[in-house]
Image (cartoon, rainbow, N blue to C red; front, side, top):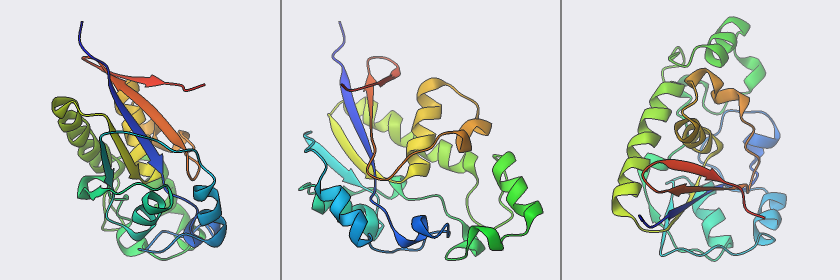
Length: 181
């Protein structure tokens, strides 16, 4: 019987961009975000990885985790929309972005790009076989769930990933979603 590999995906704490419905830039957590992260239970694994952005590195530090940065865990690149408010995007472009997973009209990454990047990263994690905690972004957690559930890319925006949420996946030949008590 193959050993079960555990992967805990942690979405970073609250930021101003999340609070104000803006496309994120490299920003710190809000005070409320820092308090929420500090109140979370401790996780343990032999390896901790973080996305390179300040909000993920800060989340890991507040959780008492020292992590190695992995660029594949970075947030979805919103291109020209970065730093702007969601409602400032023309309705037609916003509609395309939310309904067409291959849309790149903003000059950044598409949802499909994030899913492919996350899938390559998960394949490497499976091969390496080391229990891992990854502090990352809601977009990467969504992508990992779509991969795990073999769900279509168009389902990406149907998954709500709140700040400081822990999503546990197991790997034993295939990824499975594991709900913790």
